[in-house]
Amino acid sequence: MDDRAMTRLERALSISQLFFEDCDLGSEFVTPGRTILESDIAQFAGLSGDYNRLHTDAQFSSKTAFGKPVAHGLLVLSITSGLTARLPLLKGLEGSILGLANLECRWQAPTFAGDTISVRVTVADRVETSKSDRGVIRLDRTAFNQNGDDVMFSEWKLLVKRRLN
Image (cartoon, rainbow, N blue to C red; front, side, top):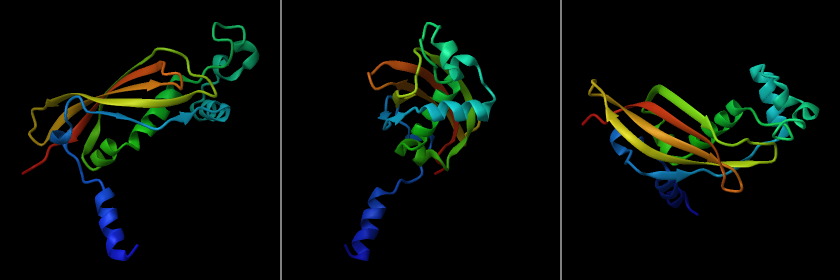
């Protein structure tokens, strides 16, 4: 492929900056999957300081309702965040996001080492603010496992720049 053709291809694949107005309500995206490893759980325990035996002690957790160690809920939330950051929507918004305004999360089922999670992201709401240069976009993110079971639902409200014409 010559340099000119590669430039056209790169240009076609590039993502331009997205703004508040570009986020159409109801738009939906799905991430690739990521398998949670035992090492992820151990490293997250070390990083967070959360050594709760439900997550780190196979003997203890074998006697719980789960029967084995459960991934930290905040680990699942973190991986969800990382997976969605790779989506074209979030890549396009990178230069326009002013901050995370709010985050709500509900865990619907446990996640275990060996589970592969993916995330479905929906543009659920778009609200103008009192400042004309920004608005709030609500993204609903549903993490689901390899069986299609929803394991976590999170609602993210992002403060995003508006397109100034």
